Image 1 (cartoon, rainbow over the protein chains, first blue to last red):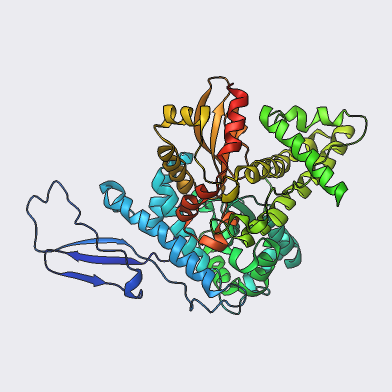
Image 2 (cartoon, helix red, strand yellow; image 1 turned 30 degrees about the horizontal axis):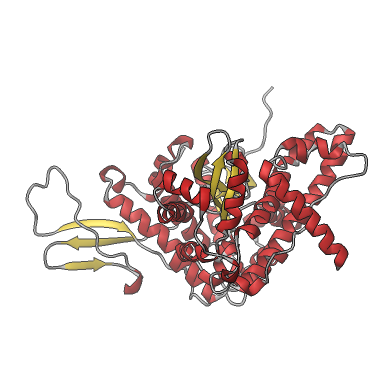
Length: 272
Length: 244
């Protein structure tokens, strides 16, 4: 049971120094236009008098690790702009707005936030925003320009072990994506207890993170991810994703790190 | 051509009769009652639109209407018929496992067919009365339950915008209590899944395929504009049948 999840994309923190005259932004990468507006100061019962400056930190919008048009022609710049700048950013702004009002949840890390607000199956409203921010960060990192094809090394070995062959795995993955209804994600996860890979479907905000499985990569099958480029032809999108977009480098890295937590080499010795 | 329109008129009439009584959504109608007919299965077919694809512009673009009708709705019809065939075989063989497994495909595709068939009738070009506010008993009922048509619209738009993922927002009538309700359903679930006595009067498709090409991710704009082509006359007719 790990509450410290090293597999999460680093949630990009913005730190504000909030005082009367100076708003200083300590920010690593994002250009100004996408920053959420400076939040009001956190008030606490111990802070009766206004201090000269007090730092408050909120989640920032992390850009994809490539230019917005880098995934063309398989995923157009327009789609990435809307998906990241519209949908993803919307979740982030709603998350920050909710955190500004909630002193308890404010201080949590992203993974703690998701686990706690999942509330063991009765999710709180903030869960949706937090999980979707996590999911979309994970999504951009699961793709790369010049991606697709076949994985190598440990990931390929593990896929062949658990699915028979890469071809079989790809078939199952595509089938899962095509038989899913509505909006959501199809994941390749490493199951912690069972110690093997599995394909998992989730809808809307849900992520296998809440069941403590380790996410390797995923695909967004919501219509907004492909409608502008492929209209209703989800099959074309899924195949383009598998052939040209999925970042096996990232997936291999995630599996390699997962092996620090799950012993995949352990033989299955039946108990007498 | 004449034969095709004959079929679609029949199926449209059959479907509208069914949607008035909501018996087509009853599992008996979908499953065994239909199968007990001596002459094969009664499959679904794509109803014709009572207007051109471009007739609802600028509220909804012709491109969207064409894709929505010819691709999405057609796919629901095709996949429903496929699932129905498979259900028929499994039922004859007594293969309970397969019967159960097919339920989600039937609910999804059958629901998609039911919902979209209602949706096309919920919309009308402006020159045919689209956007004209409700009169008569429905208008009076709306004022009683919600205060005004504007208040109802605001409520439905708020619920539609807040819906996560894909689904529908409905104005329904509870035929037992005779009360109007606003509710949402997920994916392609028909309104009856929220209450066996609920009858849909108006439904708004908030799946992204219904608006994305035109409104992109700004679902609230779509919800604001769709009321300009809303066919209140149809809703009023259904209401009057249940509450004469």
